Image (tube, rainbow, N blue to C red):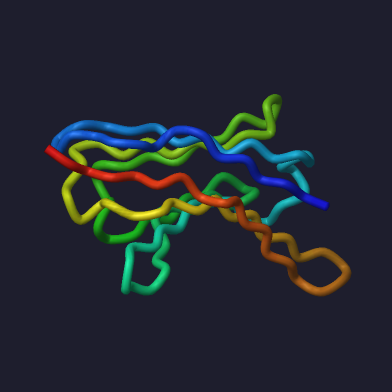
Length: 119
């Protein structure tokens, strides 16, 4: 069973930065995509950033230009950096890994650290 363990998050001031880490219990080479989603109270889950197995990245419009997703295969870890944080970035940030092999596609999720932007 794949486990995704996130770290980082917490309280951050507006204009500050955060770096989230997502460590996989399995080699990240097995995943077609890894990434981050977020969910704020009363809102739908939305894509923050993803990175495909080939290295291409995709970002939500609200973080374009101030975010970066990266991975370290040796550590089986994916990172998310967001700069110039805003109050509306407050949410639970969920790590995701998507796998589509010979069998049915599977999504794996972390528990998600809470990120709160507050003065």
